[in-house]
Every structure is written in C-alpha cells, then in structure tokens.
Image 1 (tube, rainbow, N blue to C red):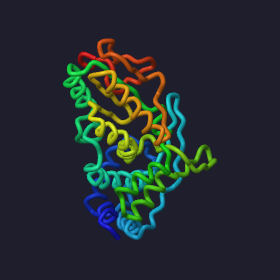
Image 2 (cartoon, helix red, strand yellow):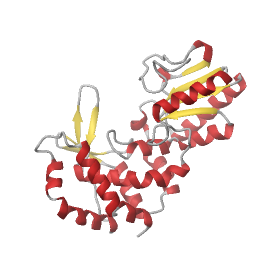
Image 3 (cartoon, helix red, strand yellow):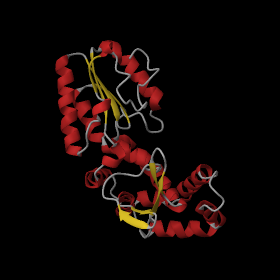
Image 4 (cartoon, rainbow, N blue to C red):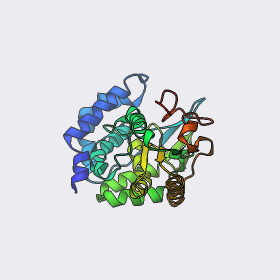
Length: 279
C-alpha cells in the first residue's frame, strides 16, 4: 500500500468527497441512488475504504443519458464519490508537474486569470495563434494518456482505478459497450486529466519561450515576429500529431493581433470570447 491510495481512502478525503456528493446531488429525484447511499453511509463508508485499500474497488457501468444538446455518461453516486476522492488527492500530487500557463484548474486564476494574462502581454507582440482541440474529451487516446499518468502516479491500486475510469462500460438502454477512446464529461476527475493530456504541449511552448496561455484545450500563443509564430505553429502541430488529436478548423486563428481574434467562426464562447480586453 502506498501513500496515494492511503490518502484517497483516508477519513479526511472520503468525508470531503461525501460532502461534495451530498451538495452536488441534493436536487436529484427522491428515487436516485444518492439517497440510498446517504441512508446507509455509516455502513458503506468503512466497506468502501477497505475495498480501496485492498485494491478491490470496481466501478459500475455508467448510464447514458441523451439530451437535446449533448449526451452524458452518468456515474453511480458511490463511483462519483470515489472519482472525487481521487481528484482531491491527485490534484496536489500532479500540480508541481503541470504548467502554470494552464488556467482552468482550481487555484490557477480561471478564465478571468487567463484573459488578464493575455491582456497584459498583448501589447508586446504583433502576431497571434489561437486554437483548440476538435472534440477534445472524445479524442483523448487511452494508451497515450495512461503512459502520461504512469510517469507521475506510481501506485498500482490508483493506476488500476484510473484504468477503470478510462475503460469504462456504458449502458445505453440496456446495451453495454466498453469505451476505447475519450474521457467522460460531467466527471470530477476529467478536468485534471484534461490538463495533464496537453502537458507535452505546455512543455514544448515553454522550451520555445513563447507567450502562451491555455484554458483546458483552448490556447493562445502570442509572437513578436513571423519567425516566432511559424516556430510555434510547427511545434504545436508536431505535439498534436504525437497526441493523435486535431486542431478545430473553425476555431483556429493565425495572423496579426491588429485584426482581432476574439470572434472565430462557430466560436464556442470559451476563452477570449466577447468582452476580452483589446483583443
């Protein structure tokens, strides 16, 4: 047993994850499984901790819910609690390895921090390269991601939980399928995993000395010269090829800052959309 799984199963972390679950699922229907978990929590908690410490915890199949705008994979309440506990422990564990230019994680400044950083640097540059990943969560390759995770997570029990999280089984109206690519939306662990997957891009931009800001899969590179801009574009293309993901063709802008870059065709409204200063 290593320190990571011991932390995940600890009283402090399990209690924090339970409080989070109770808060986020308070509006759920009275027949939802969260109420059963809360009713028998005093008995289920030590059982859950024992399973985690023994490396015996197994995630259940997810249920697929189709809405008008998106499709969501829904984790059972106990699985969501475990995923939250993992994220509470892995976030500080991975933080020293993640770039300070990635702004979407808690405590990094968020969207406002990202916009302020670009606004502070923009006057010193003439060119910009802005883009994001096409269908980011759905495009993530499990083997590539797991290799990245294995560099920083050396606990076999935690790695087993992470592998289960990736290779999840989803039930769609009674038909079960094993997911072979992509990570789940609406999951407390996914923002951290999304930050880690593009770490090679963060590292490459740092090596080039670029003015670079990222918010999840949405990034901006500022360059003082065309040469610097071309070098950044080449480096980004090489890294994305290694990660087997693609730039979104409708949300990519390359050119002079004076032309403005806050309104790309089919803009998702994520980073640097309307209201960004002087963009």
